[in-house]
Length: 332
Image 1 (cartoon, rainbow, N blue to C red):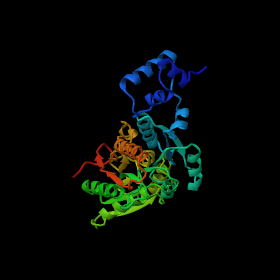
Image 2 (image 1 turned 135 degrees about the horizontal axis):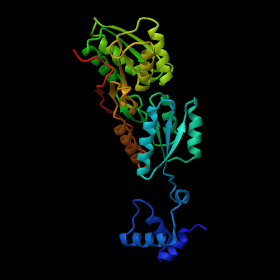
Image 3 (image 1 turned 45 degrees about the vertical axis):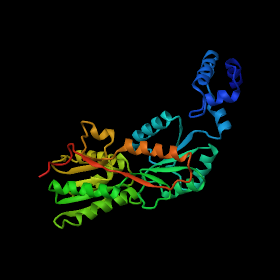
Image 4 (image 1 turned 90 degrees about the horizontal axis):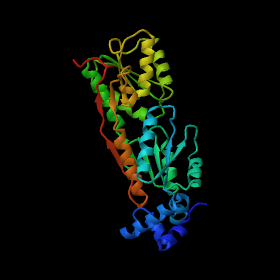
């Protein structure tokens, strides 16, 4: 039989409410009282029941962690950091896959059924209507890796994708490439649109450089490989800015299969600086996205929102930088 809170209270000689407070982070209870309750709980082998606690406090400490791109190994790193960070703060992540979902209200109903205390949308491709639907349902929401808006509807934590496009363009120009291209993810994705926009904007100042662009069907290895194979059937550019590292790795595979060399024949620069990009057999030059900082800030934001639903939404952007490895020729 499971030991009850009542039995702990009797063993410690205190009220049941005192036991409850002793196991509630931040609750008002003296050190002596807490030690007394903890000793009684240890002697009896009692462990607090999180579900029972949620019925008392009205808080489940459950955070819906929403995404829609589970084919991209980059998000394995993202989910690892998110789940660790949430659990370290005494919160419980509920991982939700919206890859095939088109109706935000279906997602709202599901999260309500689990009585989540807050929501983190971890996606650069999920339509903003999902975040707004969660907000309208009264849930604190943070959109991580979301598109920057000067007056956001929900809190946005991420990077300036337009500036990342500019960074990639400036890097290719500095290395003397005269025929460059953007190979993005899905054309409908805001991250694709913004990265291409910045790339083309920076190159518009360099009439001596030939520019082209194309789009892969997904942010996946296979999509990047297939798109590069198609490009190689024509006249490829000297260098490509790929929409993310996974597309870049797919492109590298297609280039090697065609018997071409990187960076001697074709240069590649990616975006994210995921763990695989550092592998010796990949050695990808890429734009570093400060993933850990974005995730930590997102968790802090949703945690603070749990106690203050009236705070104004804000957009917070983290700077990015080029990580030089071996897929672009040296600067001239």
